[in-house]
Image 1: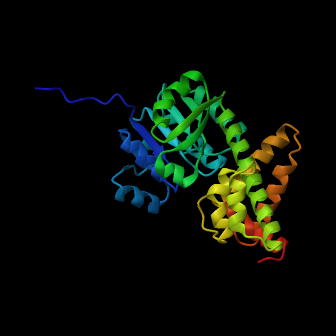
Image 2: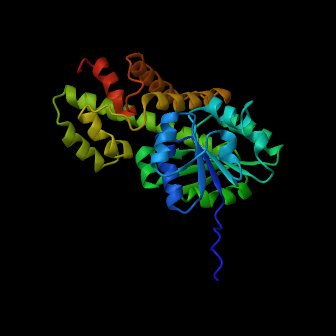
Image 3: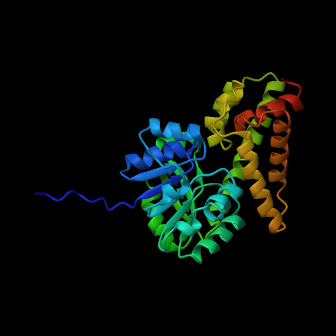
Length: 300
């Protein structure tokens, strides 16, 4: 008789099945990984069951037998709670386990978590992503990683199941620094686009023609290509929410403050997004900064 084929892929636990985590889990399964998933939200767990995912009823059950634990959570306190909290998994992970945190959190926070896990013989890679929900669904995320070369090498086969651009940015925490830089530019690019559209509209210009023209020149950008049509149509539907954009800008601002860096573009973008949230738009897409400019220029 032929012996059954044994997979060489590590067994995974995936913690966090929100709008990003759910498609990331789906792509890991397509890539052949056996995994168990957990989320504190009953609705998220039901979504996973409907997808055919093996669901755990607790964090402890999710990580039992896992070689690699992937976390995709909203903010620093959530990652700290899951990995180091009273009911967290830090004390449950055997020596040699690899944790890949794909959340966007503070660089200093992930470094502190890494020190704690290292004392238990557990490796950590920070691997925040760019590409949004569309990138997560397509399996085409850009993934920025921090950690030791050895831990990154172990993480790479897992990351390849979710992304197409995977870079090792440096030591633990540097993935978060790269992501902060990405989000700083995202916020400022959206600001510049909304500002240019406001000027063109005030002068009676054709915004669709403006966008087409700008796309062919030095002002062309991913934001102009992908979010420009939504801004022109005044479509505030969420791919990446204003609240999350503000969280990422806050992290960048905190990192800048730690180093005493004046970053006026970051400060301006943060203020404009705060204005949007003050008008109840936190759950809208981050391109909804156009409403801030509508108010500022009396073009609503």
